[in-house]
Image (cartoon, rainbow, N blue to C red; front, side, top):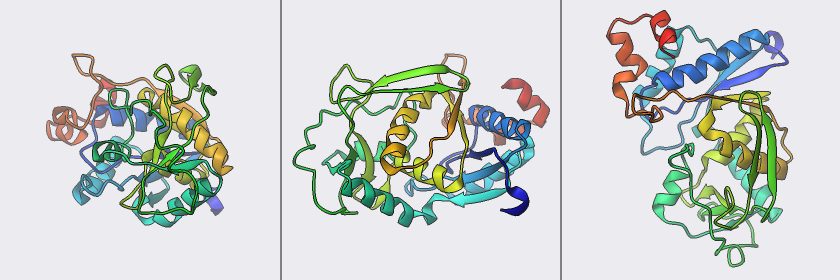
Length: 273
């Protein structure tokens, strides 16, 4: 990396499925400022795996809007170019008995491609495919789940939210169960792609929204199973609308592009966050 070698490596990880909004801006601004404070640098990771929703114009817009806000990064990566790395990780998980085939509904599998926010988190899985789906070599045309340990407690200390603790298992009282890691159309889930990329990029701290705290527990299990380093985590408070609902790409009026077109300056937008 030469001049880019730093002890702090962070990342911005937008998905080009819509325009960036104030919630994205806040998280990415925090990531940028934390990188600056540590004397580090940032990747921009284009999370473009969801082919049904990804649009090239959104990829262009997100970079333009981030630069307009004053956020800089030093290197880029596109997930759609890394399918081989995800397959290799899956082969290791299956060989170790850490993942098994599963029959899931199309709705469940589509959800696994996206970051599971607080209102869309996948339900605790019953474990019905654990026995019938185990064994054999990895088949990229099958669906797979990660096998959690029933009753295991996953704990970590978040840089902003503090101590966190989640219980795993195929039990309605668990925080989460066996989660999807691969789809039969040959694509990884959000959880698997994240950990493989974070490790390959050398990320030392992941900055994202507080609605992804549970995802961190899932990803820590994958990191341990794959022998990957565990970065630090910093989960920002969410930006919500007047009704208290987390901002999402459906809030077009609060997209950075719409705010720019209304004549707001970067300073105006930062003051709104």
